[in-house]
Length: 191
Image (cartoon, rainbow, N blue to C red; front, top):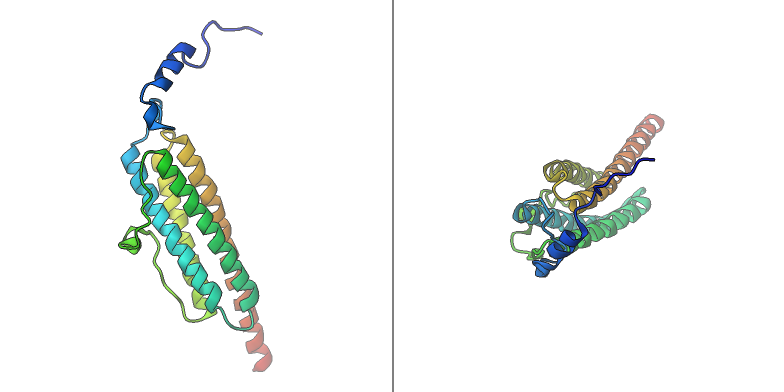
């Protein structure tokens, strides 16, 4: 096997020198190619979106009623907890990038990509959560495309969150389909 004289990494001494320079920047080194201010702004919008989703899922968990409510309420609670985990991950990344996570309730809905719609029936709740998940899927997809190779850590975090949001959307779509089948069966047997 042939070896090459030039390593794929930068000169080790140069890496060490750059690591010592601007040490106060923490995880953000000179090799970071992203627009930090824009990435932090996008992440604060994602944070607001996750917080709104937590609040909506929690309300739906407590308000779910009806024959199908128990398993769906449990799913709402699980989704709320997972969305809270996403919010925590995003807040941590904002800090790593030298920003401040915006938890201020003033303007939360303005920063959020999703809306806070309560829904009055179980089906309404599922539909509103599904709409919010679809908004999150599109938002994260656009953020991932924007970030590209410029901030690999943020991109990977967002890709991981996106995968969970897609699972949530699939769960909710399955609940709607099951409830639709059940409703049609009841109409046939009662008519």
